[in-house]
Image 1 (cartoon, helix red, strand yellow):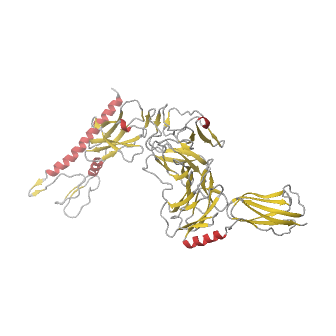
Image 2 (cartoon, one colour):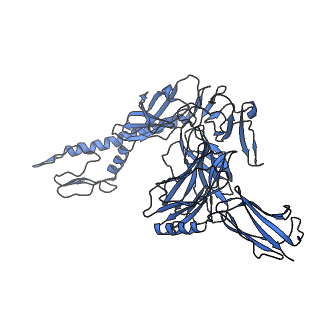
Image 3 (spheres, rainbow, N blue to C red):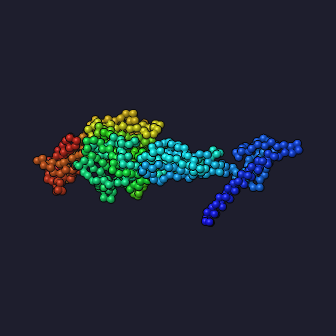
Length: 621
């Protein structure tokens, strides 16, 4: 005979023998209590439940050899059982069933039934077992009673309707004869889906009608396809995919699809393109947390799940998720914490090292990033007829500083035509951010904003909304620099710009208490010239240099040129975009080659935004 089997069998017999002795001991105690009867003395007893509280009776204390009393003596006559044996019994009988769940790691699309089993054991005996299935994208679990094959093994066939591209997670619950409930760990299988089962037109898709013609959109394939190759093509031939190569800093045409990676796509076909897995099968990834690595700078990512999921990340180094395009208009919106299937997102890693973002198919233990914080946050929306920008964020939040930090998101990349909002952090003249969050240590401040546009016919609407509770006493005004107008109560009144934005268009947003805002707005208006002007040079006559002052009521490209009496160009002193305000430049009496010019009459000419101003000057040596 096999000694291992003999040993196992012996342990099993011993175990059952010990259980019988244990149960017999409890029964003996109860029988003994019931048989106590003496001369003129009777003790009426009842069955004692393990959870029963002390009862009123003549005092009788049963003391065991080990342990302490099961209950402390209460007021009044009390029947009290003392002994470790009672404690042991209580622990055994109150324990929930132990469950081992059994479900295949991979559920194949082969027409075979999907069987789920549970092995449930309990000293009280197992009364029932149930299978709970939660589909991806669903908040609630579906309960399916399991059939008992014997005292410990339960089984059920999973309905085909629950095996889909959304995948599932499952756990079992078992109830013993004393109503104790045991619960197993989750099983999270991989589910194979058939050809044509995965489609951009599916429920939850960000592009349910497909991707429209002549629109750049970012897309990603949910799931893992068996065949991942892409046939490279040009837009002239119908469509094109683009990916960004961070090693060479250039756009490339990918030859394969990578799970969790987004791609730019555009086509010229007459009908919208609805992607599906026509020629390949695939796998729905397990419904567990999915981690995506982020290199430094901008990344293009997407979700491998076929339903919306929430992202968990560190907001001090990760910008959040930005989505490109609406149905009819182009532009960026965000940041968001939710990823929709088929949609691609841009996300920025402010660190110089690899960071990660975690996608949560279920939010059982979600730690929020930007979802909750102290302070206030203002969303700034820029809307035109063809383009928009919904990425602007300013405010004051916990842990942010007055200067540039990880909470300040960079400006998103622009395509060939666009409408965008940028911010200058720290008054450096560098409008490179789409978000500027500041410290809670201050309450008043000015945010420098700038609109950029190309191809937008207008009008352009600038609006704002507080994303959380409006702080008491917060007052916000916006100064339109080019038109020298002020929009008070900005949260209730939008700013409308009728003109076509072809160059930078400056705004200043002032937020804080009302007195500060009103005084600061007046100061800003005083610094804005009312018109383009070129002042007379000084000194005049001059030798060898002179100063030329000019004023710009708005940011614009400026050309300041010196001509001689014959109308010939001598030198161009300025040819670039300048901010609004008052400017000064020096002419040192030299030509464009650096040689001194002769004495005589010269003319300075200022050209900007279709306006021309001239001044006569005299050089005397």
